[in-house]
Amino acid sequence: MAVLVTGGAGYIGTHTVVQLIEQGEKVIVLDNLCNSSRDVFSRIEKICGVLPTFIEGDIRNRECLDKIFSASSIDSVIHFAGLKAVGESSQIPLDYYQNNVCGTLILCEAMAAAGVKKLIFSSSATVYGEDAPVPYEENMPRGKTSNPYGASKAMVEQVLTDLCASDPEWSVALLRYFNPIGAHPTGLIGEDPKGIPNNLMPFISQVAVGKRKELSIFGDDYPTEDGTCERDYLHVMDLADGHVSALSSLDENGVHIYNLGTGNGLSVLEMVKTFMRITGVDVPYTFADRREGDLPAFWADASKAEKELGWRATRTLDDMMEDTWRWQSNNPNGYEG
Ligand SMILES: NC(=O)c1ccc[n+]([C@@H]2O[C@H](COP(=O)([O-])OP(=O)(O)OC[C@H]3O[C@@H](n4cnc5c(N)ncnc54)[C@H](O)[C@@H]3O)[C@@H](O)[C@H]2O)c1
Image (cartoon, rainbow, N blue to C red; front, side):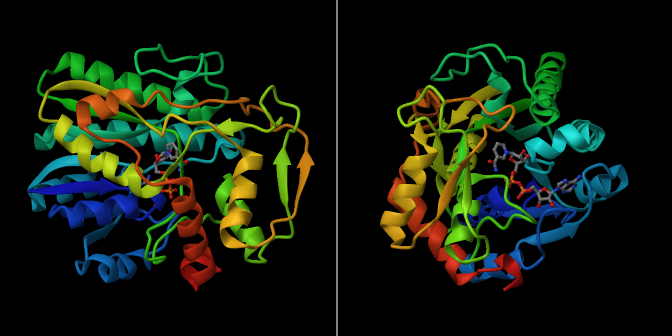
């Protein structure tokens, strides 16, 4: 039996594919490469000695999905495919709803037709909304999201919850990620954003490697210890392991919701300073205005995943910094060399 990984050529997908292969799983990747590169596969092969099956295609292409499900015996699906830039989602909301919501509907229809009813979905801490108290706990209701990206994640969570209620054969894990950073310790795979990075760590590491002049820190007057935003950063390898652990939760039917985070909030300024300390490389920064929609501080209550899945983030902040820097300095232009 194989695991179908949609979006498996992307940042979190590649790391998860590696960990699945290392656990002896057979993996099939479906990705349209709209935000990734075909080069990831030779890198994955270098790391684990196995080349996963890759199908270039779109989750919205029902014919393509039907072919995949009929050609291989697939047991479960890990669904990463989607668009993820929060700011862009306000400019092109239809693309976000089309890709993230319609894409998931089509995927679920194809799964149901093929009798494959085990799904892990990439959700996000953003579904807790603007007013939730910290730390976020899984039993809190979904809140008001401030952008179409967040709304698309909340909608898909609702769709999958309704699907499980309608058909008890489905089992779905909604994994709410906090802020994944870092890279595989070999430095062979990592985060390779197209254009200007939206996230903090790729921005820091691109400044460090000389690709960008300086880092803008959005807001220095938040009600936090040093005035900059606080987030729950976790190593992408821990996040990948979380998916391997969550596969076991699918043996029980119904919806399973897990926060995947460390349970600690760290400020943007602490992140920049730690990166400089660990790498010895200077990262010039300036303060800019707050960015619309950014919340001051949030982090996970990560105890449910530990209790029920036996999963806990174990890599340290120093590991996250070292691995980010190894990836970025070995691949200054990402997968393009
Ligand atoms: N990175 C984060 O900080 C973060 C946080 C919370 C949730 N998530 C979610 O996790 C998932 C993976 O995130 P990532 O950081 O690896 O993003 P990514 O952009 O690196 O990976 C997504 C992959 O999906 C592919 N894709 C997009 N639309 C597709 C489609 N219609 N058909 C087939 N393939 C398609 C892209 O080419 C890309 O390879 C996304 O759903 C994202 O919303 C990410």
